[in-house]
Image (cartoon, rainbow, N blue to C red; front, side, top):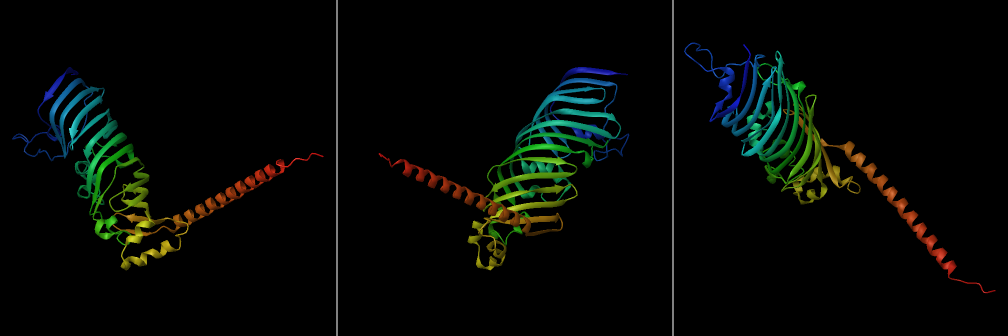
Length: 335
């Protein structure tokens, strides 16, 4: 029979794994919290809830002081806003979960993240199912506005090709610890300092679409050097990053690393940066000189210098013409 409920819900603790999977009992000893569950919303249920939950656990997620509204009708659950605390930060989320189609749970959400510890984020999401950069490599606090659309199966497993997201992200007090790609830049930057990098505040807009994470160009200022980075990272762990390292940092390097300077010396007149590419897979990647970017930069610099030279010649000509005109007007003929 249809069930309509309008009420306030208050709880000290909710174990969502248990609610979704069912608790082990004497009547059904095979049913445990690890048993895969099937998510569905009954068409016979209509809820209008005002929720206050002191603590909630779901997989690795632990939320505290959860408060907000929850409406369920016609197999769609929605909320105008739920606030909670997790990972030492305060978060807010709104959106809807559409479970009308079997094995096709559609989620649309908007979220605000305020001061979430980045290593906690990676831990909760199982490092986003990759081992290239994991929670032990990261420190810092995230502030972000996020809009997402995705589809999950009936066991709440993401169908990767359906995920699209826009993230306006700011990271404060960021640190990168023992991250292998940075360590492999030892030929270009002080190796002793690359194991532990501290960053200034980072801000960027990240787009996720078609199983590809797109990172627009951004400057990263650290305790070692300033890097300019852009690139892509696919869900299949294909990576392609372009990195610029200021040439001035190379002057501090030891003589034993001198062999890496060759690609710079040829270009030092026009190019103040060393251009590098990191590409391949997260398990097998290479770091090499980006000759194409160096060539493009040289061409751009030559064009810029040519334009500046033309402007200088033009300005000089105008000044000479003006001076000549002035000299003619200084003489008078009284005949």
